[in-house]
Image (cartoon, rainbow, N blue to C red; front, side):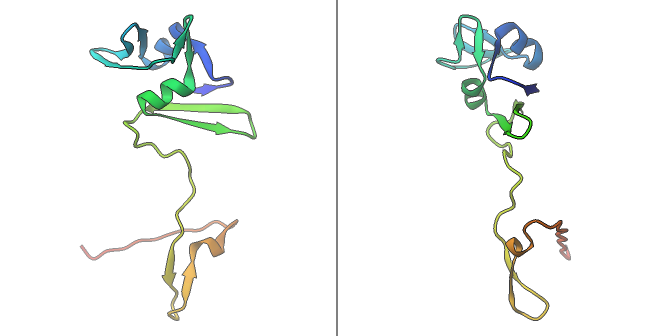
Length: 113
């Protein structure tokens, strides 16, 4: 879901995600997650709810929008930055993936099994 601000009505949030604001917390079906401070006067604090429900929340500063992903149990990627990788090149010299910064890179992995 794309957002231009980090608050929205509880009714709209439920329609978009299926998570309803109830006295016991945020609920979807029979599952309820305590979310203290996430709901104020019928308005949802998106940052608080995303943290409690394990929904990825990513900000695009260039377009000033937020993307809220589905609940993922905390397993969502929130960045596309590859980790530092250092392997020997064809001549046996160490080569760091970061040396290719700013260029498109294709990584191919192969295994015999």
